[in-house]
Amino acid sequence: MSEPVTTLALLGAAPVRTSPFPLWPTPNERVESAVREVVRSGHWWQSGGGVSERLEERLARWFGAARVVCVANGTVALEIGLRGLGIGPGDEVLVPATTFVSTASAVVAVGALPVSVDVDAATWNLDVTAAQDRLSPRTRALVAVHLAGQPVDLTACRRFCDAHGLALVEDSAQAIGARWAEARVGTAGDLTTFSFQAAKLLPGGDGGAVLIPGDAALAERVERLANCGRPRGSSRYDHRIAGTNGRISEFAAAVVLAQIDDYETLWAVRDRTAVAAAAFLPPEAAVLTHPEVSRHDHYMFLIRMPETLLDDGISNAAFAAALTAEGLPAQVLYPAWPALPAFARLDDPRPEVCPAGREAARRGIWLHHRMLLDPRFGEDLATAWERIMGAPEELAAWQRDAA
Image 1 (tube, rainbow, N blue to C red):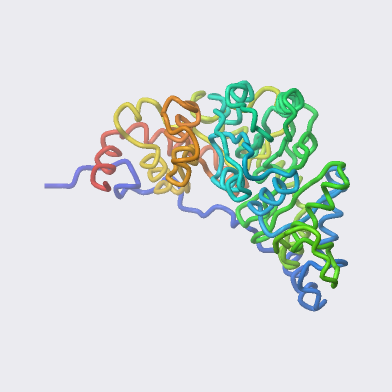
Image 2: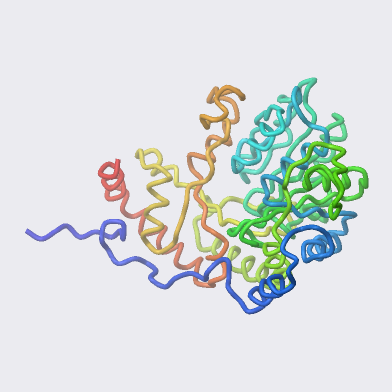
């Protein structure tokens, strides 16, 4: 008896796509030359007068900021930024339910309590109106996360924080040039943090930055916190505050700096491909871009798991596995951080809290921005989508066997 014919690559069929997507990070001569320059300079750590300072100056000019302090990574940037704002034990910080865990864990690291805020059901970005019910007399700050490269409503966030006397921290690990109306990320917050981790839009292997728009005292405090509590370049033991070794590597700084000139060109390619890909998919599949967003940076291409498959008991993890087998590497979206074991005793665990964030975790799937550098991405994704949607019984059987 012949084997039943399958349509899914997950079960042995030929995949929709066999050619690889572009590498990320992308090796190039400019990056290699920048690293060689640091090696030959003998200036291998952030101590003043090196490539780290050149990167800080370039970023400050790019954003029109008074000061940028480059640090070891995006998580450290959040921790140092919160400490710079004086946030610590006894304080509460509002954090969107849908974000990578570092946003909440950085709050815990400084001794404060993260408090979850639900997200908008259409965009999966922070729902500022939901923050009102999560306020308490101990609330000190709101962290606005620009999820997947789509900016949050910066106007509403700034208005909310001003009305309640809160600091606004922009977690811009996934966005560099994105704009809400005319406001660019990094221009509304009391400070903004960035990540240069290898998967990010400006990859340095690792690294991060804290951007301070105009508060000189805050900028000095952030710099000291990242440099063991003393001014950068100082050889004296003048540690006036208790800091940490949060310095960026000179090598990582050189890699980031070497790629800034290519940023706008790569964004234009991502943007064209993302818009085309959304048009290829059913209207309910792609996560919406808010109409007030004038620029999306497209760190992730976010899609929604079809409700019909969820009703059949098929998980977004199974759907992501099927896409990956078809040659389009996919992952499920972050779980709502209050549902993680690490935060079980810190935030309200009831399912009715942050329902949109929990729904995003149940339905969300993302594909990395490097795929958007291939103009065939949208067509291949649509073909794979149709193939998977046409074989729900096969996918359900695979899920049962894999369990």
